[in-house]
Image 1 (cartoon, rainbow, N blue to C red):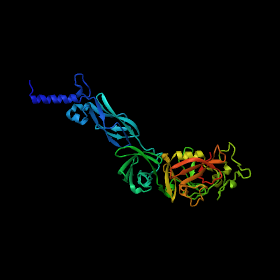
Image 2 (cartoon, rainbow, N blue to C red):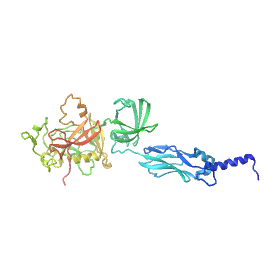
Image 3 (cartoon, one colour):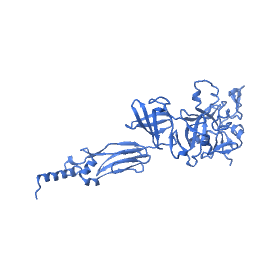
Image 4 (cartoon, rainbow, N blue to C red):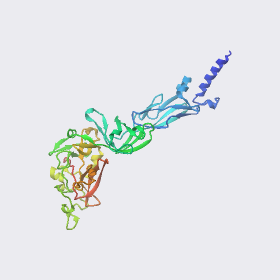
Length: 431
C-alpha cells in the first residue's frame, strides 16, 4: 500500500509533533525533538491567604506552552500535571492557578514525565497580636477597620486626601493618589507595630514605610459593657493567667478618661508638688532615702500602698510583672475617649474579647506644669504609671509604665521615687 505525497507528509508531521513533545527522551529520538526542560514564569511568589497567582510552563528547548502541545497531541495530557507540596498552604489546579490557603511555604511543581520545575510559594498572614489599628467594628458584625494618619515621603503629613484604603480581614490595600508615580496601589504584607511592609501592586518590590495610627474613637458605653462594680470602682476581668482584675479607671478618677490623682512612690496621699524634700521616704538632713533601701524591699508594703489605702484589702498598685502580663496578653490599639488619647486593650483570650480596658495618656509630675513648652504636645500623648516594684540597682528609683501613642511605644522604665505619677489599681481575691 502506498501513500500519496500529501498524505505521507501529513503522517510525518503528526509523528514529528508527538516526538517533539515527548517528556521522556528515547534512545532512537533526535535530541532536538525531546523536552529537555521546563521554564515557569515565576520561581517564587509571596501571597496572603485568598490571593491567587497564575503559573505558566514553557517546554524547552522549543519554548512552547503546555496548551499548545496538548492542542497538537491529546495524549500528552496524561504526562503533564501540576502539584503542591502542601495543600494547606497553597492549592493549584490543572491550569496552574495557585490559591493561597494558609500561612507557610510550599512548592508548586509542574511535572512532565521525569522533568519538573518548581515555584516556591510563601503565604503570609497578619499576626493580629502585633497589629495596631485593627479592631472589631462591633454592631457591623465581624468587619475590621484600619484607621491611620500617614506621614512620609509619598504624601504630606496628616493629609488623608492622598489615599483610599480597604481591608478584608487579612490584607490591607492602600491606593495612593497624586504621588510622583501617579496612582499606586500598595498591598500590605506585614505589620510590625508602626512599620508596614508592602509591595507595589505592579512590581511587588518590597518596601517599608512608617504610618502613625490615628486614635480609634471609643465611647463610655463601649467600655461599660464588660465592666462590673467592686468597692465603688469599675473593674474589668481581662482573662489574664494570674486571675488579676484591673480597675476601669485611675486611682482618684471617676471615669476612664480622667488622669486621677498623682502619687509619689509608696505614699498614700496625693500632692500638688513633688520634690525630694517633701518625699516621705527621703531624709533631707542626711540627703538619702530612708525606706525601701534594703535588698529585700523590692515592693511597696501594704501600709504604704495608695491603692490599698484608698480602696481596701485585695487592692494594690500593680507590680512590674502585672503590667507585663496585661500588655503581653492583650491587643493594643490607639484610641480616643471623650477627647483623651490613650491605649485601648482588648484580651487575646477569645473567651474575654468583649472586654475593653482604656488607659489614658497621663502626664507625670515632671510635665504637669510645663505650660507653653514646645514639648507639651509630645507628653500629652504619653502615659506615666507607677508600679509597686522598686528598681533593683538604684534604690532611689522604682519602675513605671511609660507609653506614647504617637510612637506606638510602651515599656517599663525606672524613675526617682519622689516623682508624681498616676496609678491604675488591680485587685486579686484573697484565697
